[in-house]
Length: 311
Ligand code: 0X9
Ligand code: ZN
Image (tube, rainbow, N blue to C red; front, side, top):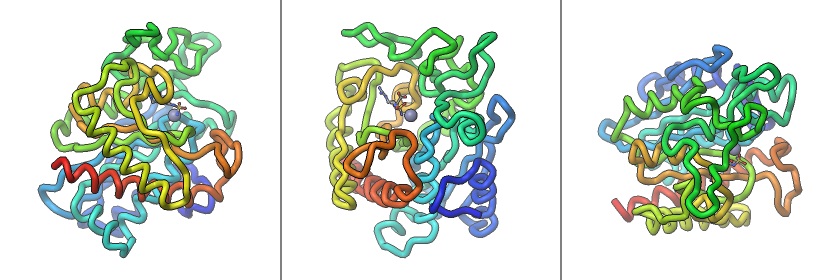
């Protein structure tokens, strides 16, 4: 049974998504956009209450060990469906939401059964090594080095945790996301990728320090998102270009959404994991699911309200 007292399995989350379509048949639709390497469905939920709405895509849990990703996106989705708070009702009514809660179902399952610290997909890559970093496998600027350091932030070694893959979109999980975005060109105003852990809001590009054309908008909207997040439980997020704030990472999903599909508001949220509440890293205890999700809902509210100022 779905709840947010603990982390839930792929199976529980997917069944819960299916049950939402039964409960809210007029505005919830669940589809499978592809299958993972091991054949698990990539389940996507669309929430649409009004024709003509602009849309936001929420990708989470593309890194297997970052369990807070799917726990947070599902909690927010649940609020969009059930909250009576007027600002949340406004988000649900006036935006079409596309949630892909578990972007890496094979990896997540593997972290629950074999190795809690697994990051990548589970495709066989060599005699000894498995998996590609799905957040280095997207096509836009795949394996293109950053101009100053010359680093791609990825590796050509199949055994590395940041292995880019033998070619872009070698991973069926990434390819499924690409095909979906390709088929829905022009409808998304925002692409939000939920990760852990750093307390930061990152924007394009992961392989360049050169400001993107709407850098100022991304900074202002991100700052407002971070301000609202901070007001909830006092966690301070940093906001900025990915390379400046964190490190190089070519071939990540938000760069692809921004660069290839021209989705103008494109962020990676690096959520809780270490701070004044404890140094847990990727292994964030379940009692932090709801506080993290509550502040992330505020972050979304801040993002949307500020982005609306820009039209
Ligand atoms: O390395 C990543 O893919 C992300 N960090 S994580 O610890 N969740 O693995 C960051 C992706 C955002 N982009 C850059 N860091 N450039
Ligand atoms: Zn991650």
